[in-house]
Length: 137
Image 1 (cartoon, one colour):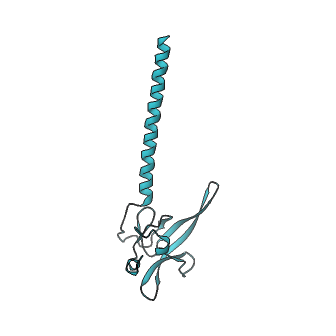
Image 2: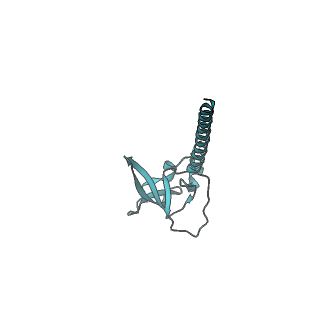
Image 3: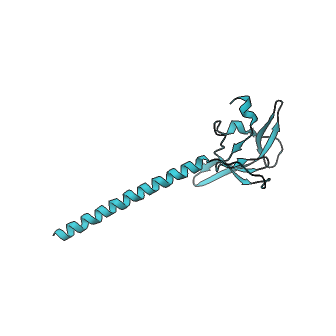
């Protein structure tokens, strides 16, 4: 990622909503057994020597924790592990993109429909053969 691309502080969460300064993010941390653990970060603007950079910090501190250009996918600036759960500036219009979860959920729905269609066709064929064998004797 070049310096000019880093100057554009437009990033998106897993649902495709734009992350703005002051948003509370719920970030996946780890999983044990059936339970998921999450971290909570606030999006802040960190002042650097050259230009301001969007970062995340813990909700109890003002010191930035990590910069978003490190955490996000470089091509479409998508933070796949984060979801916005609180918005400080709810009146501002946010940009939206189709996130990774949108594509994954559509793919899962198509697979489920295909499995159901094949299963129902299989059961129909079994019933048809059962009736045929029962009537033939």
